[in-house]
Image 1 (cartoon, rainbow, N blue to C red):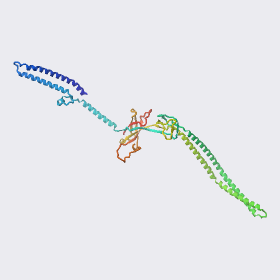
Image 2: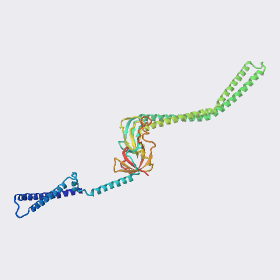
Image 3: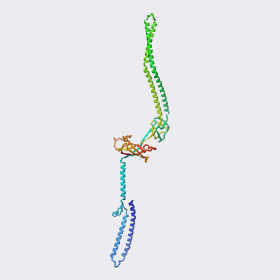
Image 4: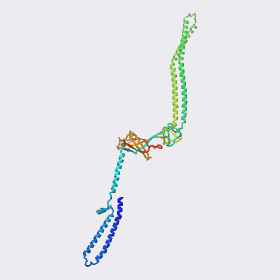
Length: 438
């Protein structure tokens, strides 16, 4: 710009010099023209030498030639600096000053210093734009089928652990629960009866054994008496007894022998006292098992009934709700997602950036959605495998042509500070983490 101002200032001066030269040349030319006829037409004066007239004419010609040279130099000063007008034109053109060179040198020095500072400040930093916010999204799904009787949440609503989300109509489950309760009461009553039978068996069995033993002794005594009577009738003189007395004695002996056999059989049965008590004890255990089964059925019925009420398992925000009141739901179908406050960053660094990266190194995080927000955290862990290794269709490098591609490895970054408390960050936001390598 200084050269331009100097050229603009020199242009009027050159114009003035050029105009003054032309005026001077024109005046001298007119004087020469006016003087020429006089010298040519008029006869030479008498007594004046002719060589003086020639000398005056030569001086006039030299003055005219000097004037023309001055006009040519002025005209060359007016020419374009880019026009190659020969050696005389280059000498007449004004050269640029040293100020542009000084400015260029300063700019170059600043650029070199800026590049050196940038390299020095970023030599231990690793950054990537392939990073996103991650968190826990809990899928809420029912375990029973039925119609939604009550919907207690809205989209993006904050809920706390234990808060009601929705309620499913459970009329049939309530009936099953009541039936299970009745079966449990019946089983408990049967158990009580079995326990009473056990106590009776523990008392009755020993008494029956003693009774059988006494009956056996009585039968044996009667048998001995009948046998003695029968022998006496056989030893007496036939004239002193009758045949009827002999037959009666014989019948009594046989009857008492049968009674002894019967008493012995009853005694053998009575001796099974331990088996009778064990049988009663087994009946009690059976009734206890039936009670436990009835209790399990009641617990199952109550559990199924509790499935009709869905509550929040953790604190979080309701996300992607796709259920409405009155709708029919199926077991296992996702009704909504619950996003917990836990938040971290998953950064997919290139494998060439992991050389000096270790857990615990500090990280600064920039969020694309919130440019004024600056988060700070640290490297938590590095996944033991690239993303391509765990993809649904991993690459088969052993077949076909091979093209080497730089793999990316997920790195988990924990956020330590900077998160807004009133409005947490959504999942899946693009961020730019920068790891300070130590």
